[in-house]
Image (cartoon, rainbow, N blue to C red; front, side, top):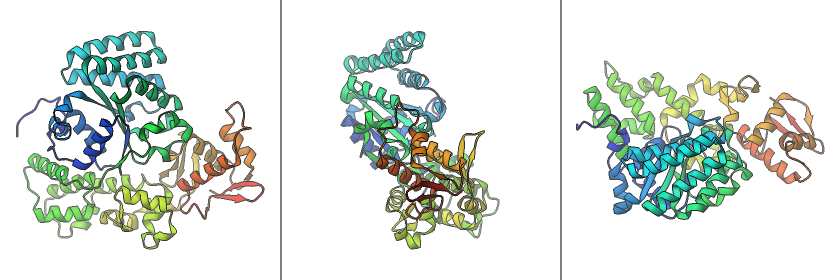
Length: 449
């Protein structure tokens, strides 16, 4: 195989038709000057798609033709700046932009924008940093005819820290350069489910409805990955085994990779492939990652697929969109086996809801509930967990959630009811028949751990 410089990203080697439909949908929104959300189960390849757009020349040419030189893709891993203040995020946006120009050998652009960045950095002021970033993006548009596309990888990890100011800054940038600026948010679930509406209100019209769901299986990327593993190991996987692995994993990218590596590493080829794979620690870890990314109501929908009409329609729709269910049947046989035999799964469904003060998180057995909660949902649930079996009045809940505002007088009963129902959708197995958060008519809410 042709040797490439060490700085060249692995994603640059993928064939041009990799994730063809999904890349095409992203490009469609980018050309329209819109932002979008790339949604999928953990391990399906969202990161790799961003790598294709950033580093794979053939993929960009396939979708943009000669226009590809007019688009500049900037990839940022938000797991690196989780829990960081907004100033640090704006610095990262600016630094990633300048570094990406240098990586693409666009030194004229890099030198100019790097000077902007250094000037902003010397001021140590968020407003100055944002203003200079807007100036930098304007320069790319009007002097170099470049549209900038930010690719926000693992964005769900930054969600707990998000404030409305973050989206306000995105709106201000977009207003300055109009259709020459887009953002693609990589998330496990839609932002509308992860955030309070008031947090993203300033940027909502830019990404609402612009959703791209990642499939579990992409033929081109799977074939390429297997070829790379075979080249490294010096061994081949029979086509019949590949076909069997696709059936057992649903073609899920990370699971396929774990299974192929386990098969090739085995001294004796397994007679019972499914049992052999399930016994592999790496395979079980990948299955756990998928399972524990789901909320209790989604886990319940997966368990009760034979009685799916009882489950929330929205949960079933989401599970179908990300490919874990098809026609109300589980698409990954290995995951079904994991669900039925794993001790961790039993503990997560039977566990009590508790608050860990040291880690400031809320758990249910092995499941960390607070990872999927908005700030308002977290405040409400934490208070309820700390006051078990008490009847908490509606006035108390309003003060707990909105008490930091100047006044709670404008908070309506409807807003509180909506918040309670959204919380139930994330912690109850059946939000319509809640076990943990029960309404006591005329008095308030009673929480049972």
